[in-house]
Image (cartoon, rainbow, N blue to C red; front, side):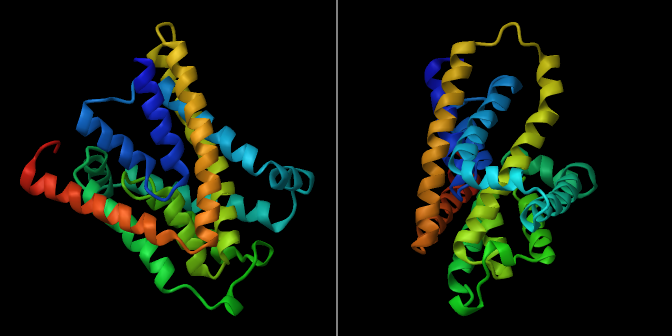
Length: 269
């Protein structure tokens, strides 16, 4: 793997992991457009570690507070949210007929539709937001809110459906205010990224680590971390200023473009 490919994949992973535009969808699109593969599984794991570092840096103060007081409700709700995430993800990956749908989605068959789903969710969040007087802070979050957000994160396993977008939208629909929705979504990404990396490590080791292009791995990881940090900051500013419309427009146009190529032009699909 060349340094430039590693940098490109790190850039896409870092930006799209935290912006509501789907990192898995964009990586799949890159593969289709340029014949790029994600390379060895170990490289993918290291990209995730880069994005993990980004969210840990941005939320270091809040994370330290949660670690010092681990029995507060926010910690409980993060744990609760993981449960429906795992259930929904396993439903897609292991249970028929959902597993066949997921396999086709991984190959890009439903990529255009999934980008449009992300666009629709973001539009709905802006159109149907609750009045300010009825929105709740993170400390006023309820158990059912965590379950709903966890379910939305599970749907985010589909390429083209944004994990950050679906969780933020889910949190907004439950009545959390914008800052609380973004904070919970990004905090929830920590156990999700760690869990995914832990599950992938055994397979990565079995693939072998002797021929790993270490320089490319480091470049990709650092790029993912830096761009991930910038993406989180950008997303926090965008959600405060009610600018999810831009991401909705982007994913909507991208979804239409992918569908046109899938059914008419066949340049990449």
